Image (cartoon, rainbow, N blue to C red; front, side, top):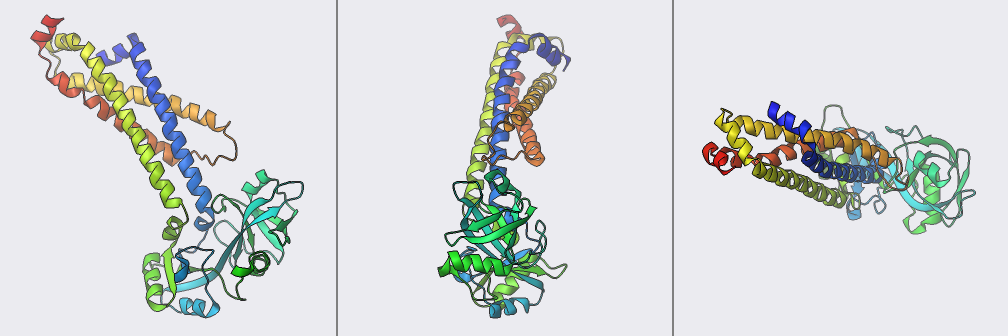
Length: 366
């Protein structure tokens, strides 16, 4: 172990090269993970914000909120299902908002809701909305009157909420009457009767699993499809595909990191066959030599993680605000553990060569 450490300090050149490559790979992993998290959080924030743990759609909507339609009679049946503690109406329309002093319309997601959730307080009076803080970058300001859609339906911004966007569009949260007005004026083909919503948010009785209550709703009420909140999130357009695509890219990058470490230590081991032979001849066993390689791999990976993390954080400050990059501690921890394990596995490929070194032939060959 001491020999491995002394070699790192006295001959740092080759190890710096390997560390530089791992640093770039670390940055790539952190940026890919940050982009994946940013895309996921920006697309799903409005659903994640709901306090309810189950969401009910009409069957013909195929879990698409905009195409769904739940009338008051169906809602009453849902509320009567054993295990349902409370229900709340929920609706959405996507329109462009004309913002004062902004030339182009700003795409927004207008939500109609009945009860406060984890991110949004109770609904404001008719004609007033809470606006997601992401819309500040689009020029939206407190107290402004926004004109929504082609009908230019006016709404006044009377408060801010955060982390409530929907498919990368900032949210405007209105009471049911305001939402119905916006929907009827700008999407007359999607207009709903009074008391109807696109989806019903369901809170189960305490102690009951959302999955069980969703199954009970499906069995008791015709024409609806009940999902847990997590299932509804994954049913959003593109969310599942994004996660699987980025996961494949990230896993491939980890594989590349392992190959880089494996190739580096294979070459290092080949160059030091004579040295290892001498060490074996004076009493060092294969396990000790292999532990030295593992230590070097661990130190290189740790240094690459530290430097790559600092560079990534610095890079995030110059990324345009329109890029949904979010660097989360959880993702950094997963990347750190994955890279360290990958480095150790890569260095382990050289262990077999060390075990097979014969002291007599190695020293004689040197």
